[in-house]
Image 1: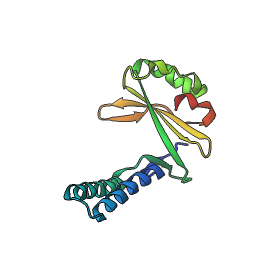
Image 2: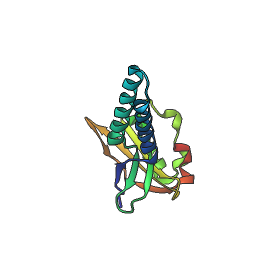
Image 3: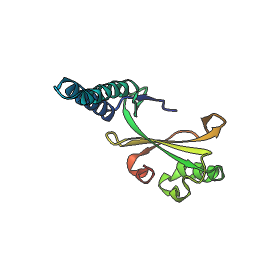
Image 4: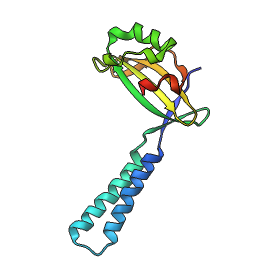
Length: 147
């Protein structure tokens, strides 16, 4: 069964945006020169914008588990070889062939907390990536070289 992942705010996103907003508030509140106050307003505005827009975490829809994502890009000529390797032994994927094309995208969703990893290949069809393999579930220890 295919897992579905939605983008969510990670703890890192919240800390970064809250830190920027707090630093901006402090700079605005301090009795300093106008240029420092302008910098404070900019930092406050940037922190609020980042809080509203930044989402770098992923959440599995059914269980609610949080995951991180890594993407690797490969050339179209490696499609059969890549599909065969992720179906049986994902640790044998040759990463020296990475970034020699972008026709294939290998998505790896992983959670260090639960020790699970999901791998799937996507093929570039003009204007978007479409899945071209099924999704495989592995233990995180089996895919650490891909992360």
